[in-house]
Image (cartoon, rainbow, N blue to C red; front, top):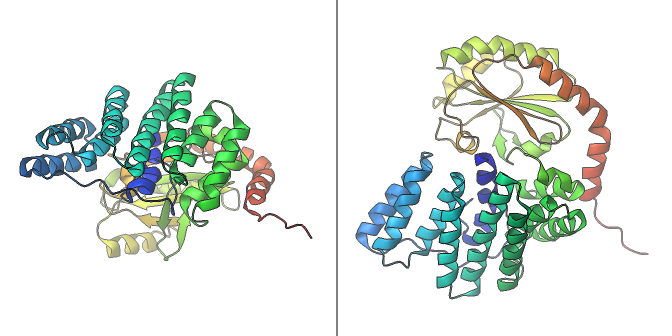
Length: 365
């Protein structure tokens, strides 16, 4: 469920605070960006908590943000917002609700109220996703709608509400919210790509989708995960300095050759900090599939997937659903064959559905 938490807070908070982290849109209106604490002791505690969250230690981060808020006299909105994020990463829904209610109780502007309602909706949505509770999805829907009422045009709330409604199996209503989101979102944004898939097939919003992300390949091309829709994707986190990764490389090379020409893509993401060493290794070992570099365990993609050991692979099916995760070298060829065979059968209709969502409406003569 941690992947879901990261995905949700990755775009939607950006729409409220322009900082980053739930599912959101680019030109969403910004709030009066919550500033950090003013008390010197609180500022120090806040910085320490941010560092804990950055290094995947949400328990300490949550305690730190709440302490910083107390040190600041209980009026640090940034402390409460960050506390919600930490609570969601660790699935502490009680703490997340408490922090979002605190934000709501101190909200003075429409933007602040919208942000607080959005965070509250995000907590309930995560709770529903974690425990498959319709009551939580209903509460999320209510909170997202309150965010929209407080701040009309708050695009992130449309996206979050679409996911809540899809999980309530109100697919027509969910589709309408995703389309509202798309009407204002940047067409080329990764959130828009994902929203188009959800609009075409709302049932995907009920699945364990891999988080949406984009990357730059070794030859400078910009690619997103949703660009690879219709193909099975094997994500391989590795590094040149990792002995087990080098031992696993022949197996990765074999799969890349065996499934060449089929709806299958290998994406190797290096944790190397030395760019030239990485490039030389890729060239020498004829690693001709998609290559990207994240720079280390603290890199954005490693954090997004919570990678703390390598080699670490993730198998994503043609619909974007996360199917398997393995640490270490693993025999996954049999599983890949089945997923690729399914992708080969469903690829044309899947692409047709997504493309239909991307076509502009036809004007009446």
